Image 1 (cartoon, rainbow, N blue to C red):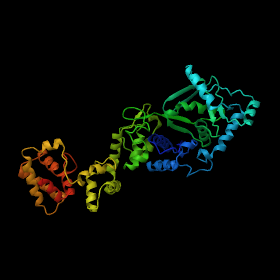
Image 2 (image 1 turned 135 degrees about the vertical axis):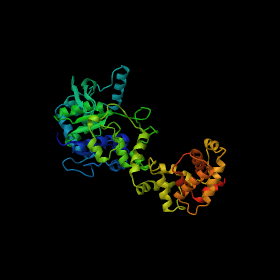
Image 3 (image 1 turned 135 degrees about the horizontal axis):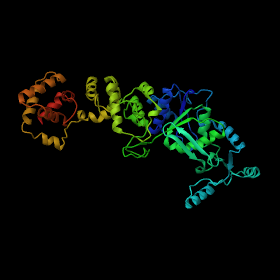
Image 4 (image 1 turned 90 degrees about the vertical axis):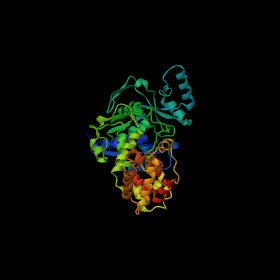
Length: 478
């Protein structure tokens, strides 16, 4: 195999979407597994939809994930540069002139109104719409006359008749298309800018791209691209068309689907860890050989095989992502988890009344159960509320006959404590068990509800310590 070279080529029309990130990831993993290069290229020809900062956003979010391009507009290799399509227009023009000269392409002067009318006519007749080749056989004199009259034109490819386009897809196996199903499509728009299916061929060939992993929505583009490769006498790369990502209702993940955050930056802002996202996204359409699902960056590169890419849609399971992220948070040191959580706490709560040790102890209580950084805000809310708000189940439970005595004994034990530490509070709970004759659920649950307002929660002694002696005694008095 020649040196593997793959590419991720987004449009700078928005931020890095989960689907785009997965495409970049699988290309990256494949390249690195085979000791190859991962190239970032920009398809910026849709000028109206390009947004300022779109390129920077794509690159920043890829790098946050750990997907580092070997080449990009910021890391060019002279042989392959430039990496932005709008800077490559002269390259496309060179090959367009060749296609026109060889008779593989022609100038089309049809107006958009004519094309729309023909389209409607074909639809009404129950025919699959395609261009009617009105301009295909114009003579050189007719073409010159129209150009001299200043008529705008596109350039279309002359699709060969009776041709079968076939290729071996790395994921789907053998795929075939018939040329009769494809109309003469536009290579170059009237403004001189090439269309996607044309520019991508020139770019992939001139950048020595060997393999292309992309979404299944590009499958129908492949025969158009193969015909350009054939016309120019070039070898096409090996394609692999990845299946859709679907939501939990098994519907295609759409940018309008508000049940799932769609962009990588949103996960970064919510306090997900980049290596956990890298790991989770690798499982969207790929499965390892064994049962193991948690891999570090280099472990995924080593384990990755295109032969294990799925042929069926991959479900974006939000709970699975939280589970994966929790596994990574558990492995982080407490200092790292504090750095992750503190900005979220500072944004919502006034921490000025608490010292650094209290904040460390607070976050430590939730270290093992935390799924993502921002979740800390909801988890710790009980420590920032002055009043308890019991639910119906808690109220009903607290009507138990023995509970008032248990709480009275516990209050006395706390009042006797000189130092309000976790260890001393734990000892007070044990002393209450002995004196009040309460144990198990009838010991811990009344104390938890009376002090924290919830039936289930983190370590009880730690929670009581964090609430503070004054607040806890006040609640037990009530």
